[in-house]
Image 1: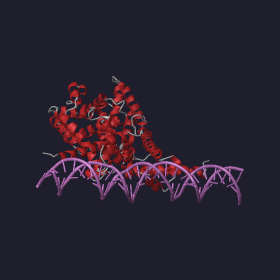
Image 2: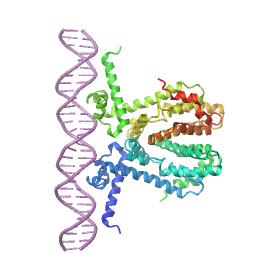
Image 3: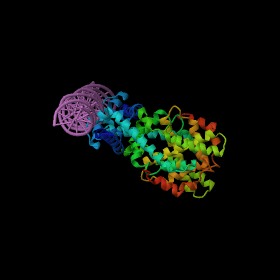
Image 4: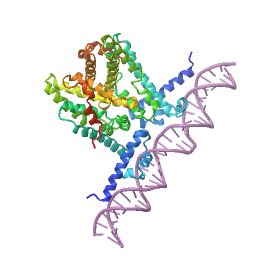
Length: 223
Length: 223
DNA sequence: TCAAAAAATGGACAATCGTCCATCAAAATC
DNA sequence: GATTTTGATGGACGATTGTCCATTTTTTGA
């Protein structure tokens, strides 16, 4: 059994990480100082050095944590989707644009870290959607679609579809970052579907962009 | 006539702005200190306060400058394009993905400022591609295409096409940010064209994605 | 119950931050 | 050429940064 000791330790570790994310979301990276962090976490100054060996490592851990939260959210959502590749792609798109994933807090955090990604390779690892699990999920689905469609240059089409879908989703996030007020989720979903319909007219349709039962499930908080 | 006085003044102002952009591109925003800036500019410490009244204002001016450089680049390119809306859209896409505009320096700067946009409204103004001139340029072109095509819900289609194209381009920039080495411009252009072809099969074709004469012009440095 | 071990505290510390001003240099005006 | 005007200099300044450790508090194991 985990003793009270280890239990508390882990709890404080997490409190520090959460404090960083909170501060980054609210004040930005440049104003996220050690004083700011420990104040939010309600812990003492030395904790950062004790648990992470320095502020930088703590920030990296926070970036990693945030990234994992994102992927976990998408993956959880994906498990509620059916087996057909179309449905899986639709679920990912809806999930990525749902309020649970795409919200002010997450967008602030994500872009704050991105801004540092160029100069901090450790952070870059965690703000990547291409190498990551997401890319594989989508790619696998497209490969299956392409296979049963039997079109020529199947591999190329699947790759382009993956790349294009991810690019569009990225763009929608940027939209949200700059205009959280006037952002329209329905419109965003519809436009991504326009791309999908173009690539695979047989498998996707614009009507799918308003399929109510999928939209509902994507909006729920799975766990 | 501008005296030697004013001439020198303006020159130093610009040197400071360039120094900021250089430092932001190379070291990131968090490591862009006053000492760093004045060292790169080769000027004295007091200059920042003298010309801009503080570091924050200087950084804002630099963000504005960078943004204007971007738009000027695109607009210059656009003037070499023909009058047809198709050609104008193609030119914008190619321009936005050309080496002149999409390179390591610009991407670093752009995303560094984006990371601060959420918490610094002044910066947000200059890192927006939706309100900006670019959006209008593309939208106007699509409106013309839609008009001659005479499809139903013309306004909606034009809006979606604009939104989608911009989102895709944003996504491609993110791609470049995270993987400048393996980024493939040709592939990026091709994928955007897949979207355009889907929206307007009559006006665009994938063959356009490899039209050599436009690609050449987009690659040139127009002044 | 009492050492031993581990975790948490909070202040000392040097380094760095951005601001600002007394001083200096040079161009503009007479 | 003398005087005024204005841009440029660079160091002083207090505030804040992140690191680290001597000390205290708490849990663990005998």
